[in-house]
Image (cartoon, rainbow over all chains, first blue to last red):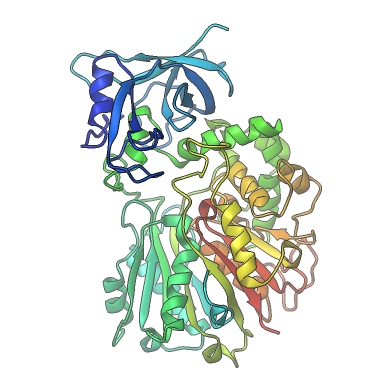
Length: 133
Length: 400
């Protein structure tokens, strides 16, 4: 799988992952979370924003499980669950897509928390883990 | 919203296609030229009368460039070269772009085409040609590189909200296969049962193999002309009653707000029907983008053809068969006919609406409406065609 593309908008997010922190960007003008991160607020068009650490908990709102490589060269271990998680404290605006560490029994509505991958020399990625109910 | 004077001002005057196959053994230019020449002849035109070109692709430029087609067709002039990079989401806006150029008086006859060896020579997946920013950098590191992984989470959310499971997708796949078996150009001709669907392997949950669009080589083309210029054609006139493009933000309005499965379709359909001056009750046939069964069913609901959560039930009860309330994906669609990024949906609507009807079913002579050989719908007048997510849509009409 390709490493994330770090650009001027996304760099604070990926640097946070490398430090083991899930970072979110919110607008200094109206407070709305911006996702994906960007210079101008889509709600009030303010240029000012702030980055802050998030708790990393949230709820699964969408999921798929890749059972078969969808194209040649797809090298992720299978089956591969991919979830969309609405992160707590972001007003429903920050829905992060990432893999789930699970035995495949996850469902929409399940609660998760964030951990980070740790492969030497590689960009660390967020990964979700099911919270015990 | 466009001016009412756009309504019915332009027509789809010609349609054409090459064979659809797993391995064409030919170049995309050859395939596109075959489809183009067929569409131009079907419109009763000479190639030199084409003065505008529109093509569409997703990501990689796998279809011949307009400049290549100018040369291949020997066009003396070309006044519009438009490459639509939205793929199937913008199939209908590719047609709209052609119609706008004709309506503006810039072009007289615009060819909309796509030719590609999507199956035998797909663009290298290691080097996707994505937008410089946006969604893909946030999906690719997690293995979400395929349409099923991009749209699947939203389909799963919709299924969860309405208590649906994969078995609810089977009837649509089976129905579209039955339609394809009445379509000589369709790739998939083997009979399919609900059991076949349920026995097919998981690809990307919630989708099994028989929930997925097929991939193929081939080409399709159509010609957009002024309706005045098309009158007198042996096919009658199939007009563009309304057209709309756009997007609510990729890929789903609900990305980070509200519910999690509302496509652009919901907003677009309301405006499209208003622009056309019709309601859902006026629609006779619908050709809706079907990358996956579940996505097609979401389109059915969000275009207002069934209540929320009821599309699968309505399919199972026969509401969308060739003799149903609204004939849906009567060619077999992407699931069973073949995939030219939505051009096939437009062409099927034109075939169903024109005088003489479809010409590639199994009828020998006049249409019999015997569903063992005939896929012609009985006297349709109004067709809805939708690109992926309802990011573009058309209302086509048979001129009285």
